[in-house]
Length: 98
Image (tube, rainbow, N blue to C red; front, side):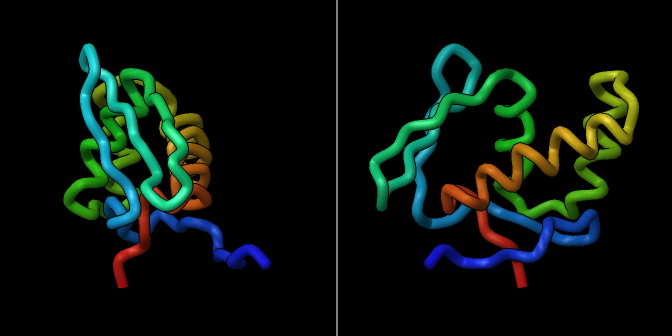
């Protein structure tokens, strides 16, 4: 039975899990889930999000920074960041800091 997770909230902090390894290829990040052996490739913005997650940022602060850097609507950035992070969490690539 898969684990049931609460939705990722803006006040949460997430960080890389120990179940993954990552490497940069031509400026983009490629990840591998060690337990499953699955590979994942991230585009430029996904790679930027991944790099920020190394230090366990507050999700809301990261969303605000990305909206400013990429000159996008904060609500759209929030939706996209949360969607990507949910996928990363489902694949055990990130974990919530307690």
